[in-house]
Image 1 (spheres, rainbow, N blue to C red):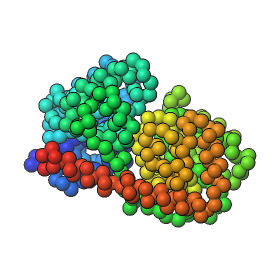
Image 2: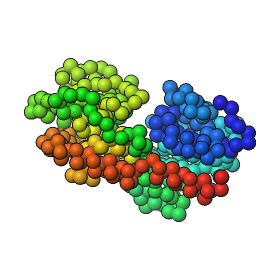
Image 3: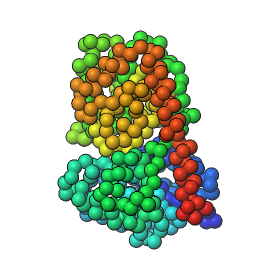
Amino acid sequence: MALTQSRKTIAMVSNTAWYLYNLRLGVIHFLQAKGFDVLAIAPHDDFMTLLEKENCKTVSVEMDRRGTNPLADLALMFRLYRIYRAHKPDFIIHYTIKPNVYGSLAARMAHIPSMAVVSGLGYAFSKRNWLYRIATRLMKTAFSFAKEVWFVNQDDRELLLNANIVPKEKTLQLPGEGVNTEKFAPIPKSSSSNKFVFLLSARLLWEKGVGVFVEAARNLKPKYPHAEFQLLGFLSDDEKTGVTKAQIDKWQQEGIVTYLGTTSNVVPFLANADCILLPSFYREGVPRALLEAASMAKPIITTDNVGCRDVVEDGVTGFLAKPNNSAHLAEKMEQMLNLSETERQEMGKKSREKVIREFDERLVLQEYDAMLTRLRLL
């Protein structure tokens, strides 16, 4: 799609096109309705085509989102700079950690105003090591050039404020990632099975707690043969960071878990689950998988961890487990199994009420609307 010369262009930059399509499509439609052309910049994947079908112009950029090589990251900054100079957007919104930092620096070099939306701090902030020291210095410089810096959870905002990385007056706290509560609405289970289904829906990475979930399932299965433990999401090619096909095959042969593959529509899988889990010990933003499940009135078990705990009121809308602790996770799963159907339904009902009250996508779009006026983009 060619950009319209008479319309302003807002570029949206992320470490995956998947992120922009699945987590920011509502924002894209909102900006288009406001009269902007949208330029999506991300590494190429299958979702680039879907973004183009949504009337976005797309530009692919090479990016190693997990790499820690400073020279490679500087190369990313110059790649983004060349893209910005070539396409000349009027404003740039950077999502995810590397675009937050290197995109903000590139935008400054190209003399284009930008903002950063911090949707999780990731690996660099997991340990206070050399990577943390480099990341904080780069981030402080980068964010000095951003017009505004938004956060999707309070933990990340407080961490950067306390580290003096960004001034408080430049920051804004979003109500999470936002979820379309009309699309993700409660629907009846299509299965009449007597099985009790626990579902973990996420990128199947070890840091998302997949191994912890499987170990908890292994402990519970003999006592609760009617319980089914399902995994839904992309597999990894790297056994160090994520679950491989070989590992999934092994677990399934043991009879511990059922792998459902991947999907572009998670709704029917959420509908047929009795409880949604995400035992992540990674620095999350606010996990979209949990927001979608809560919006569909599902009780949740997740960890007392950055981002995850924002979605759950312990004992009210679900349970919080200790991070990276399979025994404690199994204990919480057993508690869920032993609730009555009425108690679980009440948990699910309160879960949806919480999402509508605190995380509805319309609340997020109100902040974008105010930003467009505040920064005089309209």
